[in-house]
Length: 89
Image (cartoon, rainbow, N blue to C red; front, side, top):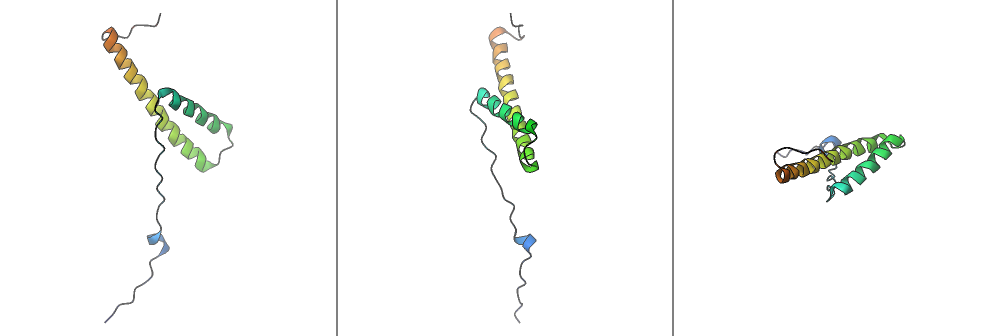
């Protein structure tokens, strides 16, 4: 007895496109420049909804990157000047 195969439904054969997130910039300055460009694009109100979401997500990644770089520099300054940050003169 052989069983007939039923065709797979389109939902079960569909694949979700996976796109790798763009790499983070090498420097704080490059990340900040890209972030400023994204903010300008988001504020323009001219982007389609899917690009708005993608831009927002990339902006969140860049913001986290910039914050981590600033925290690293702050930590290095604390090491160089003791445990307390000194105010800028």
